[in-house]
Amino acid sequence: MDKVTAPGRLRLRIACGVFFFISGFGYSSWASRIPSIQQQLHLSEGQLGGVLFALPIGLMLTLPITAKLLKHFSSRSIMLVGAIAFNLLLCVPGFTAYTWQLIVLLFFFGSARNIFNLSVNAQAVGVQSFYDRSIMVTFHGIWSIAGFAGAAVGYLMVSFNVAPSYHLLFVGISMLIVTAIFYPHAYYEKPVNTVNKSVFSLPDKHLIKFSLICFASMACENTMYDWSGIYFQKVLNASKPAATAAFVVYMIAMTIGRFTGDKLVASAGIKKVLTCSGILILSGLLLSVLLPYNYTVYIGYALVGMGVSCVVPLVFSVAGKSQNMNTGQALAAISTIGYLGFLIIPPAVGFIAQAAGLRWAFGIVSGFGALIILMVSKIESTNPPRVLQPEMYEAS
Image 1 (cartoon, rainbow, N blue to C red):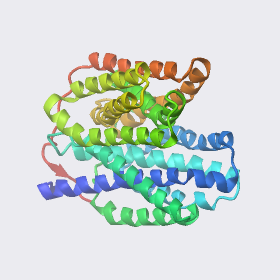
Image 2 (image 1 turned 135 degrees about the vertical axis):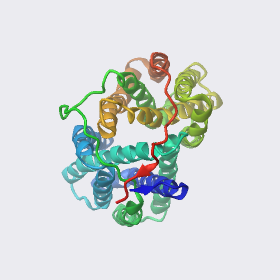
Image 3 (image 1 turned 90 degrees about the vertical axis):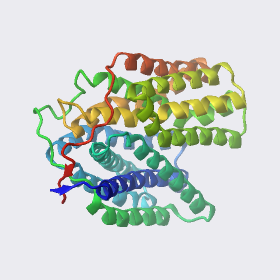
């Protein structure tokens, strides 16, 4: 056992941040080349939508398996397996020659992404326990910065006509090298034995409110990913550059929110931050619906971005303190419900938009902001992150 000094805690924090960067950079690199791969395989929009659905299916089906793994093994070991699988699979999409190959690949890519993301969040909860202030939101801010960086590199690769095969192969190998460098510095904790549960576990009674908060936030977040640009074009009759700028405004606001969220938690507490998040989401979407003009929608998107920025990392932070589940099981249980919002609500927006219009669809989605406010009002005040006593961790 080694005592955790300030440099030791910093080393753990940096290593955890690097793995968040690997996750964000790798995923955005893949996303930046989807149009190229669509063209390469001659897929229509409908065919592409069906192919891309393989990724969340793989992610969802792997959630209970990941929970079991995190029960029996250190999150550090599972993170290594997830990072290696994630980056190896990232090397392959550009080389697919048939649609069925891409479908199979994306299924396993989604599975690897789930294993990687849950374990790295479990790592973050472990590192958080060494600090008497919130640092969880900043980790997710690093993911957002990595997403920007991966998208920027992807834009350059497309601009210089670099094939997706070489681009993604280079990114995958580079991230594997970074994994090898920083893995030895990652946090090691012994798995915590808990009461045996079924492979598929829903959140315990204490966490169900947080699960619904996560569901609502992720529903709004993915609705913005999928529909914010289309809303700008269809409702506001704006140009494609203006629609792109609107999405950038949303992303910048979300990133800023994640890098300021920990300070807000330190001064106001988790419960107040979550309440304000719900208010921002509700206000931003209603503003976009009631005043459908370019600048008011820009402001509305910025409010939504700030609103969703802190919710999931703070919910994960609280989930890691569950008394009835270990960290991995709690995160997997909450993610199961949260990802349902991520997967189900955006397609539902399309059905509502077709029947009644996008403004009505966005108005209904704004109700998830109200749901967050309601659920937060029903939870007990959350304590600030605690420092482990004694300040010890077991080195590898």
